[in-house]
Amino acid sequence: MKIRKDKDILLFTKLGSFSILFGCGVLFFQIGSKTVMVLGGMSILVGIMMCIMALVASTKPKTELIRDERITRINEKAGYNAGWLIMLAVTILFWVDKIWSLNIELKDMYYTTIFVGAYSWLILRWYYNKRCIE
Amino acid sequence: MRTRIKELRAKYDLTQEELAVKVGVRRETIVFLEKGKYNPSLKLAHDLAKVLNTKIDELFVFDD
Image (cartoon, rainbow over all chains, first blue to last red; front, side, top):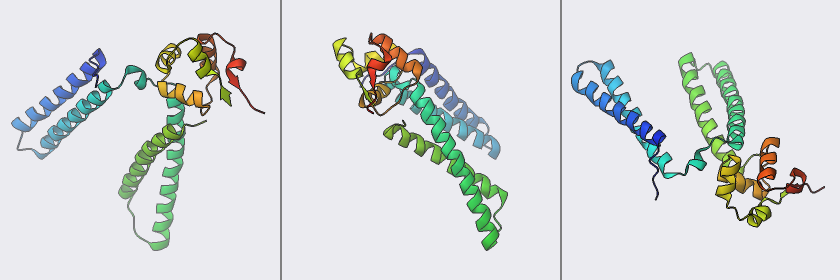
């Protein structure tokens, strides 16, 4: 497997490594405060994700990462349909709450819409990329 | 819709990767174009025709 080592990949890896080191430093020096510990943990997590993303991107040729018109069209179509799915999910929750009096709070609605929106967008993107939109 | 991209690409001895780089798209896009599964924009069709030294209406054939 050929691994690219160009400027963008190295920059992303450096930022990820810095984020991990920052997180470790925060956890080491501020172990008492819960909020700071969460911040440190998040920083480590983001750093690890950035390093993984850089590694995955480095194994692909640069031409496979171009955002061309087909990808733009796929993203637009997936976003449009994900938007309608969010509307549908919110409508269903609203009527379920009305009919069965479940006392669903607004907080639960946030999680549902984020979940439905993000996952449906990712799944639709994958589907349109496989099938190819006309 | 049928395309003559594969035929002309072979004539000019270009790989899918090379053609993709010349017109600024992903190799996958060229694959879908050759299969006739993707309708390109006018700009991409123009760029492809220019690289393959032909006209747009000769590159893309529409069956009535």
